[in-house]
Length: 241
Ligand SMILES: NC(=O)c1ccc[n+]([C@@H]2O[C@H](COP(=O)([O-])OP(=O)(O)OC[C@H]3O[C@@H](n4cnc5c(N)ncnc54)[C@H](OP(=O)(O)O)[C@@H]3O)[C@@H](O)[C@H]2O)c1
Image 1 (cartoon, rainbow, N blue to C red):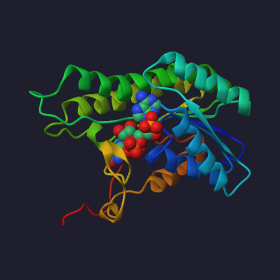
Image 2 (tube, helix red, strand yellow; image 1 turned 120 degrees about the vertical axis):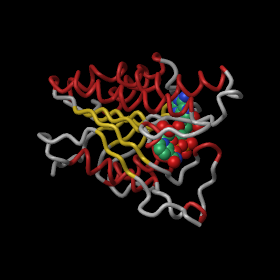
Image 3 (tube, protein in one colour; image 1 turned 90 degrees about the horizontal axis):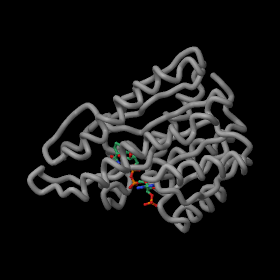
Image 4 (spheres, protein in one colour; image 1 turned 60 degrees about the horizontal axis):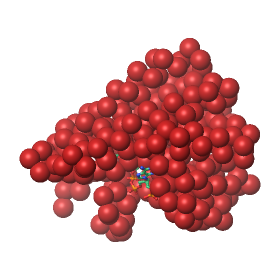
C-alpha cells in the first residue's frame, strides 16, 4: 500500500453527495482537497465543514468552477497548484440527470446532461493533464452502472455515462506511458442529492457517499504497478421492498 498523506486532490462537484464523501475520506488520509461547485457559496460552505471535521492536518478549499467551461477548469487547477503546490489527483465527479422518454426529452435537457457529464470530464482532463504529468498523478472519473446498462427514459444519461466509460478507458491507454494512472468508478444507487433527492432512512440500502470515498482511497493506495482501470460497485442488496 502507498502512503498518500500530503498529496493534493481536486474534486469537481464536491459541494455535496459523492464528491463530498470522497473529500471526507481523502482528508482522513491527510490529502489536501479542493472541491468545486457552480456556486462559490456552496463550494465555500462545503470546504469550511470539511476542514472543520478533518481528522488530520489536511484542509479543504472551495472553488467556483462550472465543468461545462474549460476556462473554469483551468482556473481551478491553477488555484489548486498555487495554494497546495501541486496536483496529484483529478477526480471528475460533477454530474446530473434528466430522465425523460425520448419523445419528451428537450434539446436543453440533452445539452445540459452531455455538457456536464461528458464534456465536463473531457475538460477536467484537458485542464489537469500537464499538472498530472509533473506529479505522475491520477485521473479518476465517476461514471455509473448507467454507463453499461441502459434503461427506459435514460437516453441522455445513458449516452453521457456510456461516453464517460469509453472516454476514460481510451484516456487510460493514452496516458499510461506518462505514468499517469486513469480509472473510472461506475456506481449503482448512491444515497446522494442526485436529481433533487434528500438522503434519509429510505436510502439506507444504497451505497453511501463515504463508501465511494473509501473505495477511492483504496484505489489511490494500491501498488502503482497495478491499475484497477474500471470498477463497478453496487448495493449488496437492492431495494426489493
Ligand atoms: N447518486 C447516484 O445514485 C449515482 C450513481 C452513479 C453515478 N453517479 C454519479 O456521481 C456523480 C456525483 O453525483 P451525486 O450522486 O453525488 O449527485 P449530487 O449529490 O447531486 O452532487 C452533484 C455535485 O455535482 C455538482 N455539479 C453539478 N453540475 C455541475 C457543474 N456544471 N459544474 C460543477 N459542479 C457541478 C453539484 O454542485 P452544485 O450543485 O453546488 O453546483 C454537486 O456538488 C455524478 O456524475 C453522477 O452521475 C451518481
